[in-house]
Image (tube, rainbow, N blue to C red; front, top):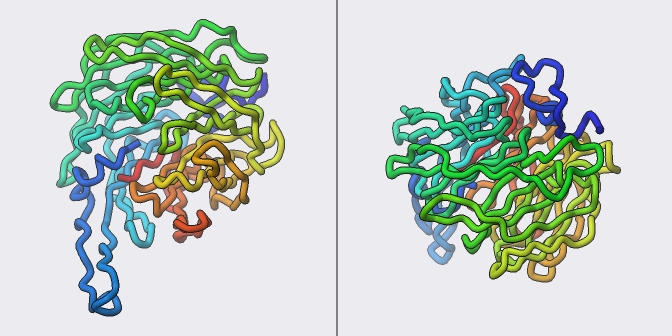
Length: 409
């Protein structure tokens, strides 16, 4: 097995020995924006037409200071001490640090509740956990508690759109878990745990490695991406009992190592980043059945397999462009989305301005793109051209120890 894949042998310097995934490095919905806009600064307001250039010019909102949360590894040498608290200027893209929320172990991936009131983080360790954090307008955020995921090395989590269930993926043990969310945002005891047992692991893999779990845009199905089994599983979530029932699965070519799936806004197509063979795949999605149908692998524009390792794709809110983080090549690939989402056309790659971009996130408006660069301990920000999708640096990187996740609200 390649030492760059996410496997079972722990890297040097990983005290809890979760996996080699750390050696590689590791949504908030638009509905959350209004609810949390006050947590880091002034709310946006209108610009008077005469100040904007004349009485006939459209009224434009002022730039606002918005909250930004940052994930890290607390157990690694040089890592952080908890969830990073920061703010970003929605106009300039500039980031300023506001502190750290300590007492949270290995918060390597973050998600926010649809109502914007609670932040959730994985605890990526051998005895995996998920933690809930109540967000305060004044910045005095409160840890509500941690629940076990029933597996090892949870690497991803997401909130079901209804806001009542938290979904998480245990990478090392290849399983996915469900936790109830109460009215305070706190988590209850786990209601389900499903281990991926079939099909068998791909070449060079020692078992299943669940890397992501998300809900389809229509809310009808839950999809889990498993890097070890080269498979994406589709489940139905019982929203009363909090249990998962598998309805189908889709495999990609052996050894591809699928890592992250991102839906087009139409919900009819999704884009899969394959970590091990350095490709992306356009997948058709049937909302009625939950069946995902992968197409042919496509180039990332970042060299061949073994030289660069795709991390994550994001798609602009209007569905016009997609961006891919390339670890190793240390670049961002820009794709034009064509044929109503059915096709990706590679346009170019640009330097990410950091080392090992582990995760990408768009601001809620899609005007800014954030990249968390694990090995350079930094977050870089880019302005997104809405017409052509070109990326322009927003300035110097923001320093943060072992930056593996950036969540702008």
